[in-house]
Structures are given as structure tokens and as C-alpha cells.
Length: 196
Image (cartoon, rainbow, N blue to C red; front, side, top):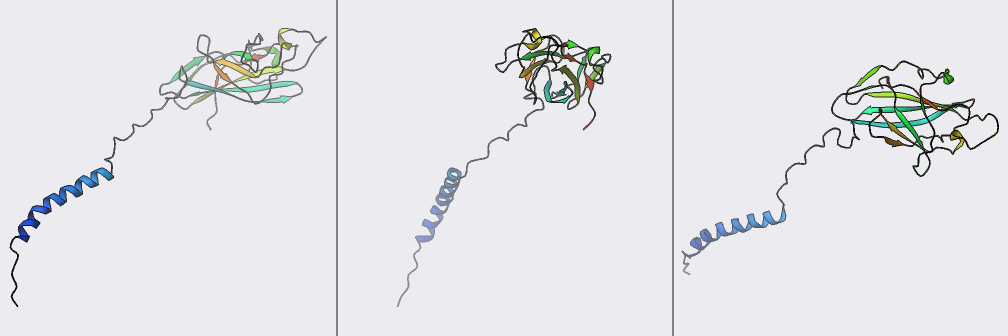
């Protein structure tokens, strides 16, 4: 029996190898997408309200008709924020309409509230630092119940500006704003918050 060598086959294989390799590369490119550029990190302060601080309000502490609500401001921006004085507070109803209730800056009528009549000082907040203020009121009624500005309705929200001239932020305390008609509510000056 005689065997013959196929001398043409090695030449065909040499020509097919580059074509097969190119096809494999094209197939791989079609099934595995090339990685896109990495997403840029979200910079600090992206969702931070103007002017670089975020304001919140906690539930009110209540005792014998006296309510005290803590208002907190945090520097959520990337620059230091300096404030001196009092927040500007407006009382809103459940539909975010002003109730026409005047909130005073400090009041000796609430002497039991620590810091309410303190002298305002300059407070500088670095990013992440906080300052607090206190809103105080009584829900007692004196004399006949008349439709005075203090009994115009129960507040639901507060519009709070860090200082006069700054845009307000709406916050919803965890307690109804049940003002009486004895003394106007009062707010204390900003003070540095204790470190957490």
C-alpha cells in the first residue's frame, strides 16, 4: 500500500489561520463591549441647597404648655459658611400658605428656654459642621378665644432662612405648631452645635 503526502494542505492551513484569528477577534469584540469611561465621582455639595447649608427641624419638646423646637443647619457645601444672628422663620399651614404669625427674634417671655435671649455671635461652619437655634411658643390661651394672628390656625410647616435675605427652606417638624394667643413665638440665635 502506497501513501501519498498531500503537499497542498499545509499551505491552505497557513492561509486559514490568520482568517480564523481575525474572525475570533471580531466575534469577541461583538460579544464583550469595551469598558466605557469611569463615572466621575459626585462632588460634595451637589444636592446642597443655596447658599450651601441644609436646614432641618426636629420634634418639639413639650412641658406644661411650653414647646421648644430645635432648628438645625448643616454646612453641606464645600466652602466654609459664616452666619451671625437669627434664622428668619415663617409659619405655614398644611398647604404651605403663610399663617401670618409673627416670630420674634429672642424673647424674655421664654426665660426658661436656655439661649433664647443669648447675644448673637459669629458662627463659622466648616463643611459638615452644624449650628442650632430654638423656636419656642406656648399653646395656652388667655381670655376669650378670638381669631387673633396666634389662633389663626395650627401650623404644619416652617419656612426657614439662615439669615435675612437668604432663600428659605421648608421643613416639617415632627410636632404640630399649636400656637396659643398669649405670647408670640420666638426664635433664638444660631449657636455652634456640639460635635456628634
